[in-house]
Length: 128
Image (cartoon, rainbow, N blue to C red):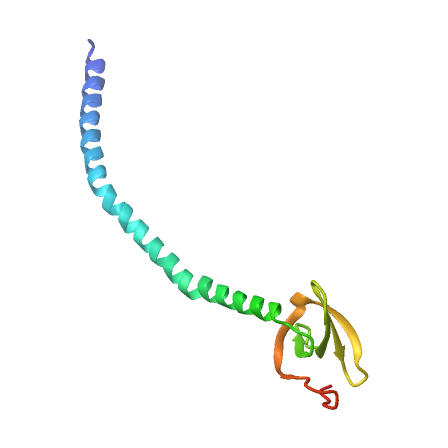
């Protein structure tokens, strides 16, 4: 063997021994580092769930229940700000009367923002 080949062989053996020691250190310390990275991620997800996801699901459920419980005679407000009284309900459309002249308008069910507390109980009551 030549001098250079002996030197390269010696360097390769030394690098292999150092690499094995480094691998053992990484295997032992890698678990702690991995947990150190995963725990903050899990905590961030939990915070996002309780601050953003859960309240939005509750709100969506409340709106869905409100839209499912609409009935003729309810006083409603649309997302466009139009107030009126429900005259008829079909699958996904609602016919409502608006104004003093009882103008009939048709809206999509999803376009209802909320149901007002006042309902029409008799014909003599004027809400428009």
